[in-house]
Amino acid sequence: MDETLYFARLRPGESVANPSWMLRRVVSAAGTVDELLGRDGVWRPSDMLARTERGELPGTLTRTSHRPPKAIAATAQKHFGAVQRALERQRAGDFVLRLATPGTGTAFGPLDAEAQAEVVAFLTRAPLVGDGPAGPFRTDGMWVWPESIAGEVLATGAHPEDLLYRHIEARKFFFPAELAPGVIERARWLLEKTADGPGRVQESNVPGQPPPPTREERLRVLSAWHAEWERKHAATTPFRPDLHPDKPDYNLHHVDIDASSEADWEYTRRAREIMGLDPETGLRVDI
Image 1 (cartoon, one colour):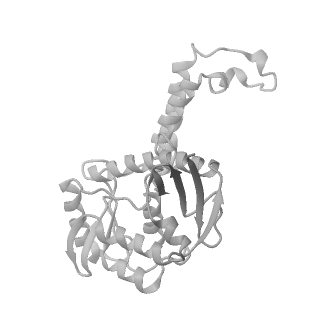
Image 2 (cartoon, rainbow, N blue to C red):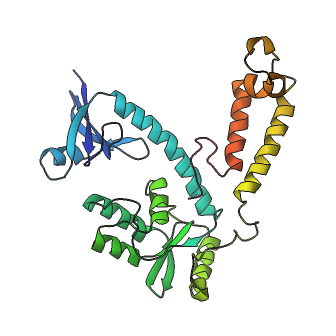
């Protein structure tokens, strides 16, 4: 009889609802296979479960039902879609480039050996820009950093500067395998600007495009979109004030209240785009 056993491998302070690793052991007549749930929500063969059982890896193994892994996998798959869309924009050069600063951050706790290795892999394997005053520089199409930051991570056990590390986590430690040639040239130009003075060295805009809109500008566009959306759906949205006696201004907002789910989704997707969010998930993509 086939059987699947689920385990959460937990760092100190973690719970089954939000573990660092979710593992399973599939037992069948054909044999036993151990698997690890990846950040993309896909199960793949792994020896992590057996190694943790043997004491070769740190962390606590906790048995769980199939429900937490199923929920975590579904969320991971959804969020990984947003990551892929952001990475494609990075590959094409759709984001303003900014230069990371050497040193460590303070907003997150210390990194254990596994976390350090993962951060170092990101910092040392992303596309190469060239050599600068601090040695090799790399970029993922949004951030540009000296590879020497990886050495600081290993030496101190701390993460890179807060904004860069938040970005790395938001991209789930993925970067484009390659970048459009113009992105690399822009990154090289950015390195030449390091002598211009203190402050964050970054592009003011993507070449050929206007500067990124401010929040106030986004809100004005969002207001215009809302008005356009209301006009578009006013004639096809049922007018039912009798169903909303507690809303005295129903006649002014009946489209917002009674629009179809399809119309609501149309508004939501465009509103998220206007505010710089992933249209499918609402996750930020500009960090």
